[in-house]
Amino acid sequence: MFFNTCNHHYLPIIANIIRQDVIKMIFLAGDGHPAPALSAVDIITTLYFKVMYVDPKNPNRPDRDRFILSKGHACPAYYAALARRGYFPVEWLPTLRRLGSPLQGHPDMKKTPGVDMTTGSLGHGIAIGAGMAAAAKLIGYKYRVFVLTGDGELNEGINWEAAQSASHLKLSNLIVIVDNNGWQSSGPIKLVSGLDNICSLFQAFGWRTLEIDGHDFSQIFEAIQIATDSKDRPTVIRAYTVKGKGVPFMEGDNSWHKRVPSPEEFKQAISYLESEKARLERLATSTQKP
Amino acid sequence: MSKPVDLYPTKPEITSYACTRSAFIKALIKLAEKDPTVCLVLADSLKSARAEEFAQRFPDRCFELGICEQNAICFAAGLASTGLKPFFCTYGGFIAMRGCEQVRTFVAYPGLNVKLVGFNGGIFGGEREGVTHMVFEDLGILRAIPGIEIVVPADADQTYQATLAVASRPGPAYIRIGSGKDPIVYNPPVEFKFGTPKIIKKYGDDAVIFACGPIILWALKATDLLHERGIQVTLVEVHTIKPINLPNLLHLIERTKAVVTVEDHNIIGGLGSAIAEIIAEHYPVPLRRVGLRDVYPESGEANLLFDHFHMGVLDIVNATENVVASKR
Image (tube, rainbow over all chains, first blue to last red; front, side, top):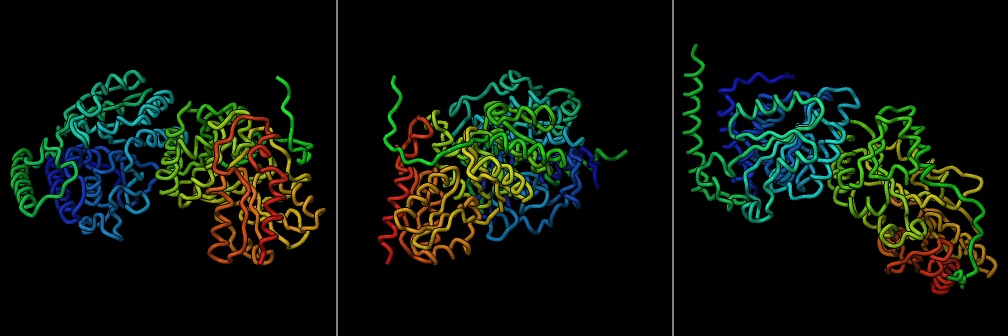
């Protein structure tokens, strides 16, 4: 189906399932980046289950909305969302990073159905997204291009080359969401690279900027609605997130940037997420009653 | 300052020039007239690419992004991902070096249909601009990346034909062109056949000289001189560096059993290396590589540069005599 009607109340449950998938995938792969994937889960969930016009049975449909995971190392969350959305069987998820798997260590548009662009080397999403957004205007499609970047990868200079181009070309269909978890691999961004004034930088290049809580589904949805209504300029949404969100012992602990849970930690994470899921389901049922 | 004295008077007589950059744009306009998906991406290279006419005729399909090659290559990848057919044209060095990772990871790896056209190829193409604006590593760098076709047309008309040929093939490609003042190699023009080495002169089988780009004229002069000196060689243009035509080249190597390569590129990585790989793996015979000898060149008059950097006519003659003498 080429539309999304998922009720707001179910988004947290889907996000919870995706978080469990992420933990399981990385545990089984014995390698991966759990915390940067977890901070992006709520944004990716909102995009694929509420916002984006996509057709999982026809993943290359030319008029679909596009998504670029510029922070490619968060791909377990991406793959889980695509599988749960019906692009490919969920049975593929445990094959992450295995030889012969369609699920590469970083996204590969040639191997994974639904992946619109190969990514992984940081900083490239906005530039590629600008090209996709310009193509829509040239061909006459109405699609939007969503780019999810980390805040750390905004260190890369190419982002700012692309910021110029997207603004100059008035690419109002380009929507960049910054998963602003405040950390990069070496430590807190404020200490490592000092990059903090993200919105004013984008504003200086002529972008519309919004700031939201990246774990509040309503805020994510509404910000994207506002961005979609933009007529003459691209939008960046600075989404404040928590690295490792959803697994208490990973939250704000940067050792989980790239680390595999032990069997004990794995059980602890899944059991927490399971109890959380039960709570969310009760909440959704009670809210659904007329 | 007085005019530099030319210490190397043995040179090809270049009677006519034509612009490879204009030839590329002429071909692109022809393509764009028929195919609405053909676009041009530029990095403040509109004027140097001679692209004004394209920009006037197809303003919507001309993306001049300013001085930002990495961004431009990714932008082109984004265009190509939707089915458009972008050509990105700027200095070859800024494509192969500044944009190397973008070419590899976002064009070649996903196999996107982005065509890269790099000008100022070689020290001849860069001539007076100096090292920063010359490129003599592009073939080596790009040849090491899987999934890019590489073509070095000899002159303007060959560039025109090569552009049309490359456009008709799916996937990433790199075309190396020149300075804008490019000698005409083929007069009258000849057919460009993608992937097929072309025999330019055939005096005999004492040795085979493989050459690409405008330096073919120097190799041709050397071939004639060698003929006068009693060494009969076959001169072959290898314009398609990747995919390299193994059967055709191997046939010539087996027949002559002595090989010289001539290119306006570092002797490491380019045509010479591609031929060396074939020889080493399939048919070991003596080989001499004429090219830039792993040093940095400098600004200079195009007609003096090859001689100064040991890539002139007499260098090709010496290399050939040497390789023939070492035949078993």
